[in-house]
Length: 343
Image (tube, rainbow, N blue to C red; front, side, top):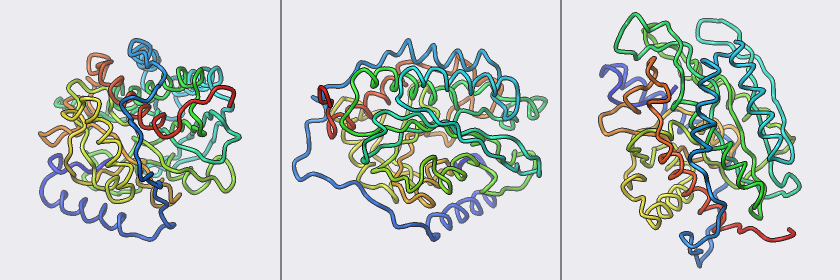
């Protein structure tokens, strides 16, 4: 799923770092960087819709109540319907992009990326994304008996989805002067489990790999994208992850500066950290769209204490963390592309 230095023994860490760095330096379409204005807006003063943390928490809980969203399962089907039906209420268009994915062990599972759009008629666009599946194996659970059990995926999956859903709900009533595409990537978290004792990069992030090669509309382009992952962690810590900082340095700098201006400098920590293999890598490399990953990155080398365990349930989610992330991103978007009445 992702590279995180202290989660693996030294020899594996070195191989993973080399693999991700090879991906970083690999061939891809020319990256388009956001054009910066010489006179930056006052982002802190930007008028934005009001993000409701209680609503986002409810959206998280509703997903978890369905059960683990394992590709092809009944819970997965129900969650796809839940996301699609709600996004249809708030967005102008919703597209379900179905595909087949081959997992690390050769198993084929169904996948479904969901793309919901505000202002689909506008050519200038921004992507806001998260993954909506939950992991099949709790391979980092402290109890080895749980290593083949599914993960509830409250923070790792559902919290990012909930942020997108609540942002769509409030932004639909006050749309910015740019197109917004909310992309829910599937089959992100089914990469090779640790107990398999080997590692392959491309077993992760199947949905974003598929979308980056075959976007939901022909010749699709966007100014930039923001990926939300594990954003409901208590006492969150978001660093400038290396892939984000390499492919989208201007956007990364801007988001962290906006966070600081809002008083969130201790949450959006101004330091560059190791590369993480996540959906943004393939959007950056294959689709050529600069994307930043806002992802929990704890000082102890883990993402958060319940990562890929059976205890990633609603007790692992703090609604205030989701509100902080959404506020930073909406201030950035509306600072650059404010709402215009009768647009």
